[in-house]
Amino acid sequence: MSDLINIAVDAMGGDGSPKKIIDGIIHHNKFNKDIFYKIFGDEKKILNYIDNKLDKNFFQIFHTDKKVESTDSPLEAAKKGKNTSMWLAIESVRNKDSDIVISAGNTGALLVISKLNLKMIENIDKPALSALWPNKKGMSVVLDLGANIECSSKNLVDFSIMGASLYKSLYPEDKANVALLNIGSEELKGNETIKETFQLLNKKKSEDFNFSGYIEGNELMNGNVNVVVSDGFTGNVALKTAEGTANFITSELKNAMTSSILSKISSFLNMSNLKKFKKRLDPRLYNGAIFIGLDSPVVKSHGGTDYIGFSNSLDVCRRIIKGNLIDKIKNNLEI
Image (cartoon, rainbow, N blue to C red; front, side, top):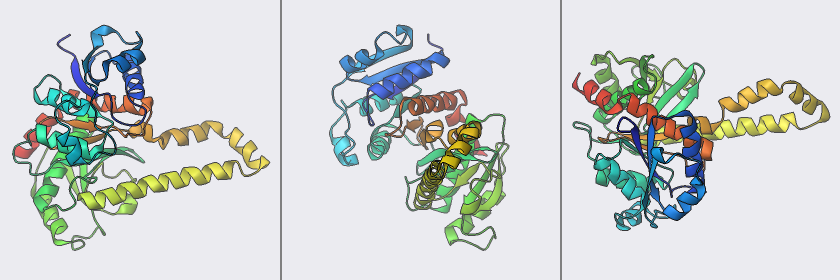
């Protein structure tokens, strides 16, 4: 079984854990027999939910009854020491016992504990938080989403390289097209950091990605670029705005479909198209933020997702390792 991908799983993080974590693993295992799950958490609770639904050849439990709470500050989580399920899972990656780590727990704690345990990739100054967004033509990688409020031009160039490498590892058949999120598409628009980054990326040559210049917020979903780069403040505002807009649209559509007998009949007749629309905006299908810049990848599942969402995050882990993300970043940094 040595050829299996080893995923270290914090089973105690997020709402409804460990049940949804174990259900997600069981669901993921049905379609992926190339993964070995190293599960960190309360063994009795975990075994209760596994209930012989998972082949013993595909998992191992590492018991601890200590966990990082959602209310813990990053400092409090770090002070809890090395016996929490989150810390032990990350430590498994540091010790090269696992290939990648995933947690649905406290985001701030995950970032801090990851940085305490894992080294930075050489020549990368700051790690970034990235995620997958749907667009009209497929998917986009967007970063940074809040790990770094202030960034230099070098940081943004590094994020561009890491984002392009991530996209290429997830979608090996496509070429990454990188753009900087800005207030306009003209070269003179934006602050000095953005303009300096533009010049640096214009000079950079890579077989793995093209630099497409600037992109404005209203073009993020067009699909003309598939890697969007910004500082953490701007990226987080864009993320929350996109989430809020999606929730508003689905809520208003639901109200319109149920406002009268005629609208309900119309909705019934269009049920197939409405299901396609709902699936396209289903956040569970895009679950899994990636903390990149460290010498081992760290995946953050949304704490409020269900087992389907967690299963999709596990698949992000699988694709990252199969796509050799860390090697791609290192190779692109050398160009």
